[in-house]
Amino acid sequence: MRKKLLNLIQKIRKFFIWIWRQEGTPAERARGVALGVFSGCFPFFGFQTLIGISLSRLFKGNLLLAATATWISNPFSYAPLFWFNYKVGEAFLGKGTAIGDVSQLSGRELFDQGWTFSSRLLLGSSIVGLFMGLLLGGLCYVLFKRLSVIDQN
Image 1 (cartoon, one colour):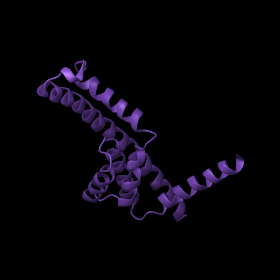
Image 2 (cartoon, one colour; image 1 turned 90 degrees about the horizontal axis):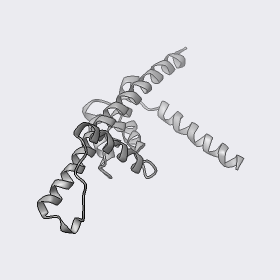
Image 3 (tube, helix red, strand yellow; image 1 turned 180 degrees about the horizontal axis):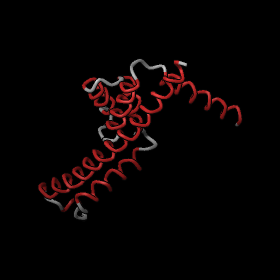
Image 4 (cartoon, rainbow, N blue to C red; image 1 turned 135 degrees about the horizontal axis):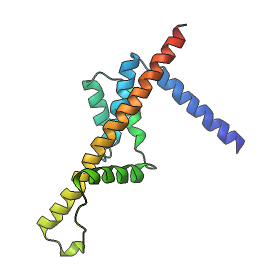
């Protein structure tokens, strides 16, 4: 058990060293992280990485860090993250109508239910993504900036 824990710690250490050695200024690297986290908060499975890289290219962030940061949503965090995003959207837009028997819904009612759910999830994802991206991007900027000063000395 101890050997597995030490191996895990070594892998985490190597991952942070890899992040530290990415090219770019502290601002470019932090932008990459922020845009990746923002993109990772959306439920667009399979497209989060492409969105993160595209946004990072547009805003001149580090592309590899953007792609890596999209993994804020992963198979272990999907359910809690998207449930939280939905609840945030619901706080802004109000509760949707309860769905009864889906087989009894007309096509229009089913579309309305889908829109009610999707609008809350996407608004919540935008708000949470913006907040988390700014928070983690800002934290990374401070860390990259401080550690680059230490490296120069």
